[in-house]
Length: 111
Length: 118
Image (cartoon, rainbow over all chains, first blue to last red; front, side, top):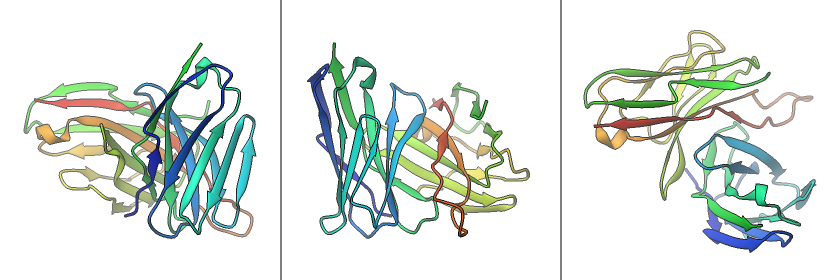
């Protein structure tokens, strides 16, 4: 199965700055999702973008999807210390909920 | 409160001793799934179930079994655990996608079960 790959793997920023993460995948998808995981806990769904969408917003989150480049980006604006977490992208190739996860991206927001 | 629960949360066992990790959801979700998370490998799907009595292999099913006798429960069974099954396990559930009025549903994850096999 395909797998998303996040880039950069680790990111450290000051509170108030923006954080951008990228995800690339290998095959065509039905949708792409971003999840957050706080230190060894369960994943929390952040946002889903479908293959026919190019950009989506949810609060301080902005996700873009470029299916021609097979890549997505997650932007967190005005970061807070509470945003410190690992962020995963996950692709659903067929719209059947079978997700292929990337390896994750560790974000540290320094107060 | 809508949630996915897993038990136990932490487990230390020895090679070969059968164990079961339970997963239960109270959202009437049809779809349930098990993942394992390992450093540097992200999450990998072990098994999934589209509904009662309907289960299928994910990407890394070897050494695991599941059952889906009731809609709310989806236990993960390790018949003969080995050290390479030491991992962090997550159960997840969601509604099934599809239907003209039903949008793709996101997955809700349990808190995780940390397993150490000696």
